[in-house]
Amino acid sequence: MARQGLAEVAEYLTGQRREFSVPVDATGLSPFTRQVLEACARVPYGETVSYAEIAQQVGKPGGARAVGQALGRNPVPFIVPCHRVVARGGRLGGFRGGEELKRRLLTLERELVGNLPKARARDEEASGIGG
Picture 1 (cartoon, helix red, strand yellow):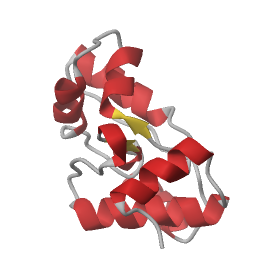
Picture 2 (cartoon, rainbow, N blue to C red):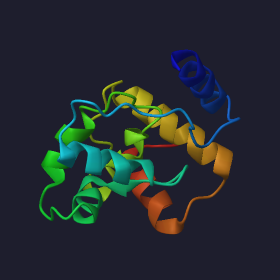
Picture 3 (cartoon, one colour):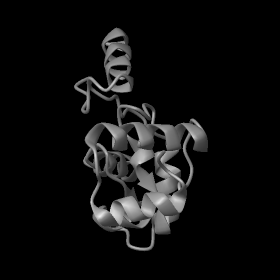
Picture 4 (cartoon, rainbow, N blue to C red):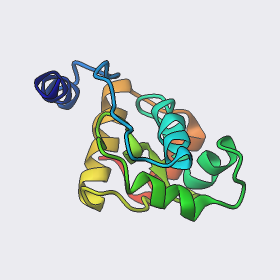
């Protein structure tokens, strides 16, 4: 299973994969964290959503900070793409691998899918994501 996960991450990093098929072990995670990770997993490749949007999706309006904390518990940050969740106004927000890696992952995805919807591209310009 670990070998499959590593192979899929390598494919992702070279632009050969946009979704992961390796199962995620959510043992030990709270129901809220599971909900947040499930919502995060639905964010399309090359797009971003805000922490507030995820909070709204999981029925916790005003829970953006709690969403950030839940994403910090993500056991597989590439496979459950928490780098696609950004702060309000397009700022990057946190990421276990650091801000520079988050920026690079978002740039990689954006370059591979071409132009993003205008609102998303505007948010990314404000955050410094991109080329």
